[in-house]
Image (cartoon, rainbow, N blue to C red):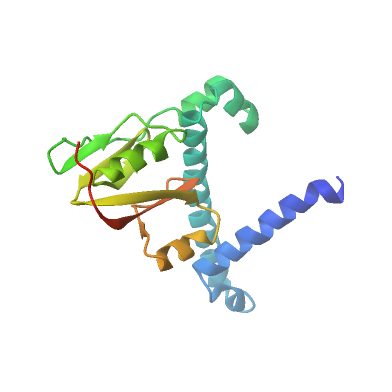
Length: 189
């Protein structure tokens, strides 16, 4: 194995180690003298592993929404198309939202058209209050809204919050969604 091919693995391992350290900041010092700390290390590592598995499921869902086939996804995972579909193909339970004058569901939308659809809805006073696979749940207000989608990996999220953007729900890997009112009255149709 060359240095070039092992470096990404080493970088990932270091980053994941930092994550485990964040889960329990006292762990590193306790490992020097406390047998129980090794069991705590197992707990923290298992917690991180479960979250990585959730992120993998979200990444596969995102790839499917972007149009990737089960064959290509299976190839990337080193498993068959059928195995990928069996493991990741069950859609998450989706709550149904009844449309009213104050709420509605924007569907179907994908990673390729959702921001344009949200921009149009935002001009008419609708803003996202939740989202999932192929949809955004919207609430109505009297002013226009703007929406942003940013990568879940970067530091931009803090900058957006400082600029008055509100985070919408929890992260939908690999994206985080934000909204803010513009102060302009909603357009009427």
